[in-house]
Structure formats: C-alpha cells, structure tokens
Length: 334
Image (cartoon, rainbow, N blue to C red):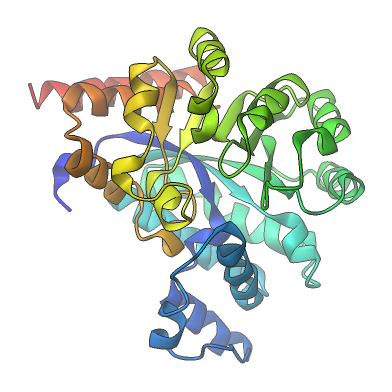
C-alpha cells in the first residue's frame, strides 16, 4: 500500500473484537490455555471465507473465547491502534460488544478496563484520538440490553454512546425503542446498523423510532428514492464498509457496490473497515480498493475523509485540527 492512500481520516465503524488477527488469536489462546477448534494458522485462516453475515458472526463470537483478562483486551486494542495508525486513521470511534463477553462469563469491568486502558494513551502513543461505543446485540432481548446499559452507567464506563449490531434480519429497530430512549436520557450519542442486509424500511425506522445520529452501513438505502432524498437533505452520516460488504455478500463484487450512486446522490458517506481482521483490509486497503475499482480522484478522497471527520463525535477543536491536516494532504497533491 502506498502513502497515497494514507490520508488523515476518522474511523467511525469499527468493532474492536473484529480486529483480532489470526496470529493474535493463537497467541492469546496459548496464553490462556484455550483449545481452539482450528488450532493452526492455516486452519484458522481457512475459515475466513464467509457465505453471509451469520456465517461470519459464528466465527466472530467463537474467536472471542481467547479474550479472558484485561491484558487480552488491552493487547487487542493496541494492535488495532498500531494498524490504524499505519492506515492514516487520526480519530477512531470504537465499538465493543459487552453482551457477548458477559454471555461467556467475562465480567463487564474486565472488557471495559482492558479496552479503555489502551485507549487512554492512544493520542500520545499513536496520534489517534478515540471514543468508545457500547454496541448491543440485536438478536438478544431489549431487556438484556437495558440491563447491561444500566450496569455500564452505574460503573461509570467511559462510553460516549451506544450502537446496535449483529443479525439484522428478524430483529427490526422497533425492538429497541426503550433502549435508545434510555441512552438519550443519559446523554449518550446514538448510532445503529441498518440497511446492510435488512431493507430500507429499517433505515427509516432507525431514524424515526430510535433517533440515531448516524447509520452504520445503510447501503440498501439506494433502493428507496424517497429515503435517499431524505438522507441527502438531512446529511445523515452513513458509515459504509466496502470490503466488508463484499466479503459478507451484501454486494456480489466491489464493482457492484452502490458507493458511486450514493456519492452522486449527495449522501454523507464515509469509509470504514468494520471488522478488518476478517474482511481483508483496514482503512488504507479500503481506500486503495475503491481507487482501483472506481478511479476515485483527490476530490472524492478528500470528500470521504472530510465526511468522516465532520460526522464524528470528536470535539470541534479536534475536528478543526483534522480538517486542517486533510487540507494539507490535499494541497500536497494538487
């Protein structure tokens, strides 16, 4: 990957558990005495050809078994920050799945402290400002999500917001109205996955019923012209993950990805890596693939990176700093 694709950007759609590279999985398994069903690097990598979202999720949750101690969570987070730094990321809003860890007997405090300990030094160590978002599993009950949110609030967890992820089909946004009302009352920011494998109606309901500030994915919005007009008029941020969409068969090929249509419609799109250890690329690889496939020029790259910065929950001063860095990046290329 050349430095041409290392533009200063913000990553807004990143699941920290999805950054567990196979090598680190094996290292943590050995550290914790865990027997894996795929004990060699070759065996583990062979599992990474997914047929759909659920196929990926099955492996994603199975591999979490190696995360046991605070040090495990911290090492995973630091490994991501190092790779993100190498991909040009300057601000990252990182999601984690508290219910997935509680469900396998890991105390909430272990995950939160481990991740946040690595994030505490991210600015000084990697030049990356960070924020933490608790993402709730939509295939679990709203009652479970509410209980975990209350536990996070009671312990003073350093989260800035909540998200909604996991299997979209069969788990509509309407299932989580009270959860998002509680988050709003607590002063938390709100994002949610919608319109990845689910229909455009999920995007409508995520906006209208859950009151989110950003839509994660949202690529199926292009199937509804009225929705596209609304998203464009309101400049709702859409955190699109191209390589993820290809690997999970949300689109057949990168050439079939609706990103060009979304940009042409004036949508507020930014690029993200989602679960990069599983999908073959961090931010740099996503940008590089888009340039190779669609011929994106400096203007398009600047727009996408600028959208990510403006759509972030970073303080205004940090946004201004990053936009200045982006302007300098552009000036060096025109």
